[in-house]
Length: 135
Image (cartoon, rainbow, N blue to C red):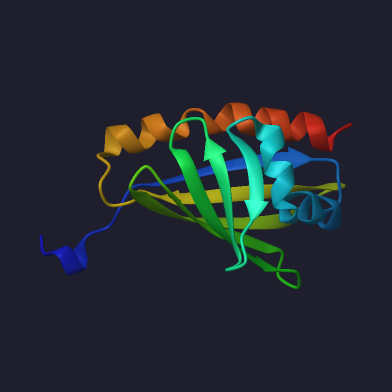
């Protein structure tokens, strides 16, 4: 198969909450709240618009946060440990609350197994964010 016809592995994670779409969007649009998940610390916004922080697995890392209020998009580009991840994030209405989804496409440089392993810790981040949201 040629490189132009290649597809990468995709993993979708989600969090549902009784918070409104706007409350959920606002919570995750504040990049500092990402620290509540437990995987990143010392978030600082840089003059170039990127955020720098310490990541428990990737070490010193950075992230470009791309938000769209109208469509409730919170995409980001994560760079750390020599890898670049594009993460597609959406906040959706769900009954009397909302659901936020993170779509991860395997970055080049990771095997399928390494990709799955890297994302195992994200479930505990989701649990911590859920607790913070539902306070």
